[in-house]
Length: 408
Image 1 (cartoon, helix red, strand yellow):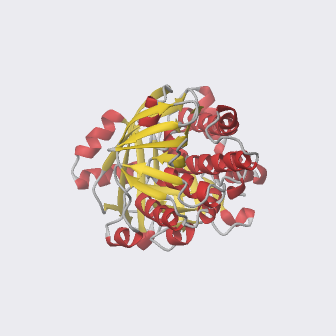
Image 2 (cartoon, rainbow, N blue to C red):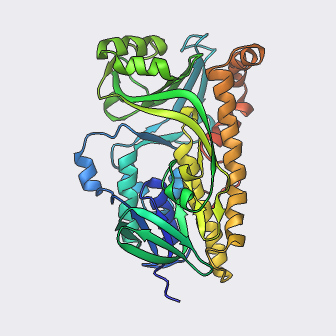
Image 3 (tube, rainbow, N blue to C red):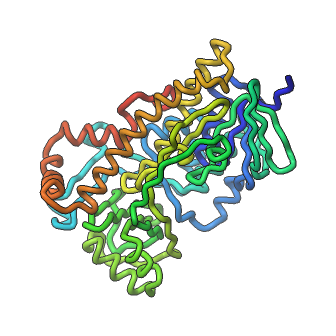
């Protein structure tokens, strides 16, 4: 039987590229046995450096840093406009941003150099595309239009090509075509919110700190960037978000300063404004015969904790671990028995994080009633507890839970 590739990854975003590189470098599939299919091949890093800053940014955890090191991409990421953050400052709308009632996490408290790094989506994508080429991964331009799951192989239809592979990995986002073609359903819960993202300059320095305020009707985060700028992620009821998107820059800035309680002084827009509707998504299954899902194709979480990309990179590393073990035992990488090991591992971790994020959204960001009040008043107590803060920091940095080899 002719097999074109051992693994075909559909989706050339950061999660798909990371999956492909880890499979080629760590799982033992070897040169030219892994391919990535997408309608558009990512730009080179040199080209990205010439472009304006991407408004979509990620807060990469320590676990993600380790995974990107294992993928031979971290040096390029950290050298291209990335900004480490050393602290997180979180407070509720009922208390002032500065003072004992704000919850402060500091890397120094646990002996770390930083809590994470803010990096652009297109930088991460370009760095991983370069790593993929160095690892011998084939990058193929073409839309996936059909998928046939046979007993001994999967047949992927991409553009004018048909390729036979042992495993197809769906890394093609929340609207995953692979998930649909494989017959896997997904449960989607609409938050009734829209996130506004933009780049701003502030009167006062961001102090290498990620700032977040729970508003009562949403969440506002300021993430530190190079050149004293910040990236905002402003999650609000959709009706209000649409009004703010239509407002003049001056009116938008006034509302932004008010919702941020003047924590960094005057704020000025430094880019256009983009919007993203918010929902939670969970695939009915992460795997089926000869198909596995990673990242947003398998799960989407609320952005308030900045964990979406980090969870996806952990998926990529975990799948590489499982397939590496299977390869050593001469198991078929597309066999459902093998793939279910990956599903059991990552679904439990992802469901735990997704549930925790939803609790924060319901109780802290938008909560009313006794339980929400108790949670909001408990934030200063957490701030005074070294143990509680360590638990939060380690989970946010990806240093807790069952970690794949690349993240340790």
